[in-house]
Image 1 (cartoon, rainbow, N blue to C red):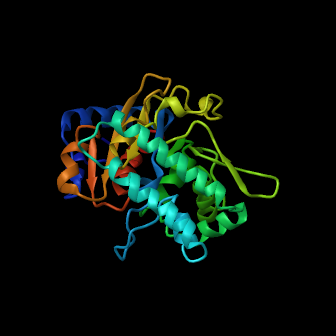
Image 2: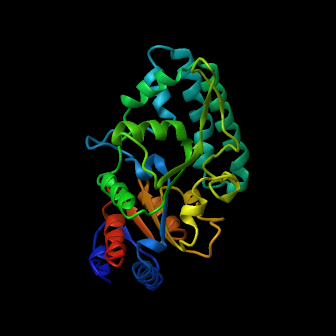
Length: 299
């Protein structure tokens, strides 16, 4: 494969692969197809963004932007908001429960979080200021990955159970704009005439429903993804492994999963869902190597 040594990738300590033949076949198909056959679907929180910064401190997710910024000004609101995490977070990560059993709790968590944000009386400009000073950080070389996808007109779908408005604000702060090839499918805020948050988009997107059931029927990127049968998928949870479900074309998906914590418990589980599992890797180096090999076939 041009520009890609699978042996070199497999020799890296952070790389785990269960089925080397299947991965080899997919890589061959992707590199043969080139950029014209490719689309990329990625989670945002702790996938496109870092789980921890270079000092080892936990980075922020979209929702954490609020409790990080509001904690000192409105401690009572923050107590309620963080309380939802302590109430429902353990359910999300309870390995004794099935996804079906977790779903009602996740719906309640997201709905109650959205209600609190609306009740908090946040203005759009204030939220933008929170984002400008938050501790969301992209993974190392994620900016290079995004720039080259734009250069090669590869559709890039950010599929997030976070807050799409915050993702959009973050990308505009980081890059000055959201590129035309980049599309955000997430929980979007609505604002009233005075700029206050007054609603969230439907359907609600939580961590266990990231599939075609929540894709907007009038999505503007349908034409961009038409005919692209090779899907690179990036995620950091088992739920992310199903983000490609419902892509309308017959597709082959190459799935890369990031294990950010509890590797001893999660690697074997993730290997059932992802072709490549990366442990404690806060970069996009492996996806970039694969993408470079695909782009090389496009010339």
